[in-house]
Image 1 (cartoon, one colour):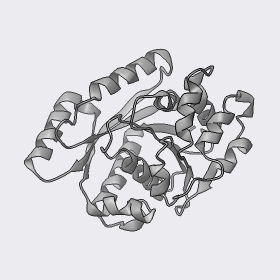
Image 2 (cartoon, helix red, strand yellow):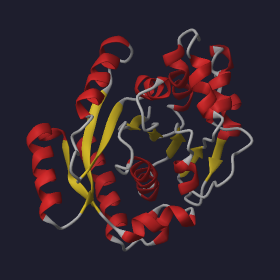
Image 3 (cartoon, one colour):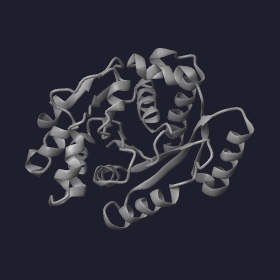
Image 4 (tube, one colour):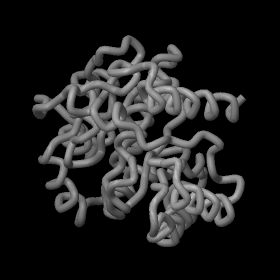
Length: 260
């Protein structure tokens, strides 16, 4: 049975997709069978792994198929699972068509459970499933939180870092109450940390407010980390020695150690 981690924050520009891609790649580098599911219609996680064009079958088609639970077999989902340049990492890509799913789900039965049906089939195939959620609180995000076992929340080390966190935690509590009682907080991850007073003050404020929820690992502001997506590579393949690459490896190891 795999661990299903939703990388979620409705605030854009906090390193959400960067975290999803590079955490998944780090687990794969540690030889853990890992699947990355791109649930953002912008498809940035897919692009970050080199998939610049929409695939013939992506997450939109799979969620559409999940309308009928009888369709949910591994053989039906398998065509959407794509190999990457890392042996232990697979991906289900996303594209602009996924935005239509938000409208299609409005009047659908069990609309919050489409992705959960998919995950149930995939859980025995992978050790880790990482889901890149959309940067908003919508029906696609509710599907992600309903399907996940835990939520990882990237928090940018900038002014207003905690803005919107109250709304996100409220949503998580509602999901725990009504849709997924087993959903846990994996942790808050400090991202884009710079060696200046502002970043240090923000990190201190986040740790004071969220206490033990915050990971010890901090992701620095790093040029190589920013460059990697334009080359269609996780940073571990673009520059393994960079501070960004080393930090995401430490995060993967911290999660593994916590699970032990």
